[in-house]
Length: 216
Ligand SMILES: [Zn+2]
Image (cartoon, rainbow, N blue to C red; front, top):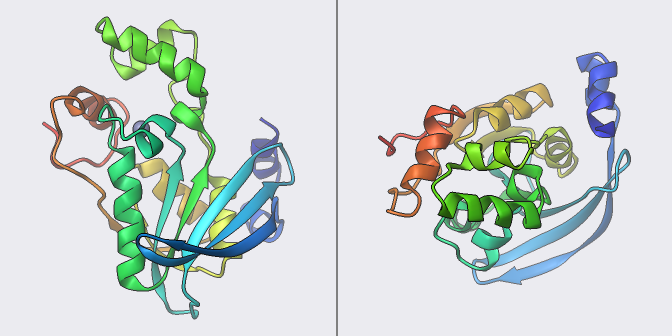
């Protein structure tokens, strides 16, 4: 991927200075959780676009709740109960609204990067008994193609430096630190597993290393 070449070919210090994203548009966004701002970002190294929904003017010492949310059309829009993405997004926006500041960076990497059609194909295999990793593997797809470096750049571009990441994914926590944010703590973003999410969350915990306390 082109965007990953940038971070691989430069020393860490330099990565923090070189911007690979740019803000293309911004407006106010009133929501059911209150007033936010919405900004559209474009990658300078690929066709990727990102959305940041954020709130508040922050100072150097403000510790802000931040979520990097990977698009999940089925969960975010259609309220699928196969995964916990919808409730996670809702929790993130509620937390930011309560705190008065913070950001959600929404990245269009549907189905951990495989795209919506492949995700539906994977769901079909899951209907026949495959788990989320086996399904991707049987389709000849990577288990997780996501990268978070540019999301972290966007968070910094919005002025956030000290963060509480709302995430269970160690990769996202690492990306925040690697990208120059001060990770003050993590806000777990976990819900009681249901009959539908139990297997999915169990794979995330035991095969992908996600930090999930409620999954056995
Ligand atoms: Zn989902």
